[in-house]
Length: 405
Image (cartoon, rainbow, N blue to C red):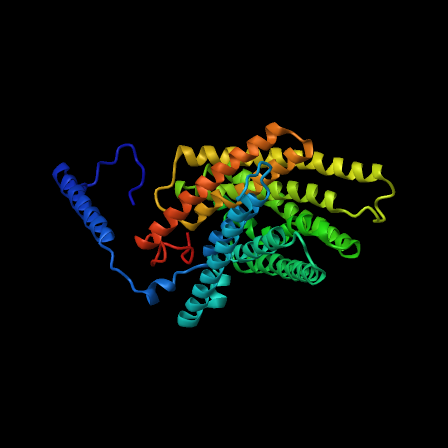
């Protein structure tokens, strides 16, 4: 290393222009060779590819389940709409069975179950399994709870409490492990850091749907737990938002390939909005909190007001993410593309819920239009997903969430 000196002559080993041109040509030839080798990648068999089947595949099932719930929540219906939603729900169950089977095959053939949970990147997607379970429980009530019998309601009640216990453990244990075992730079902060808190937050969303049909003795504890855990998830998300906004201010937008993940931030306030409104409507009249019809109206008014407040925050995150993706669209498929579906599904259901609360045909119409956009995006991402599997753009060494970024 030469010291800086104004009178020091240039060193004698600086390459000439001809040498530089030869080096540049050599580099270009090497790059071309690498690109040619990349395009002619070796076709791997099932055993080699299943090793890279990651927890992020549950983004497919949580998005499909969310779409089924969105169809069930439509304000403008037509004959056969329910059957379409039921079909999507059943397809999601099939997807869930396939994904679970392939995950089991991966760990049976290659092992590494605990290593996948401990991985600095793949481990953060483990909660998407529980988000998929949340859509299945909620969809079960939506599509089979019209004439719910006592045993059916008991099953829903048990599933709800099991879900609350498991997701609370996930939120505590996974964050405890991450705090102790990994060191993430704040300049690299991505919304996927919120995922361990996402499943416990959807306890409130489940309660907002299923509590209304439960007996008062069961509905009140479910709503109390739903409100508590919804608040926990939203609070953790807001603390993460502070780091996320700081990262955007200091380091700028993420790499174009990771920008679809920015839509994750849309989810927490949107799901909280619809959960608060739904739980306020499902609160029984004979609870200690309600002494008259006026009390019930006040609780519902507060829930709707809070929901509108949170909807605006969700809309702001949606606009930021949409502008970022439109400015620099990703060029290669990643499973994070499903973030353009599931959080926006919650955003759309929240819009419809507010439209119903305000009895506004305009807002309901916007919700219907948003639904059509979600369906289009779902189909686009699904086709891209299938194409990526066929082209070995995913489930291939170095291309999945099982490698450090």
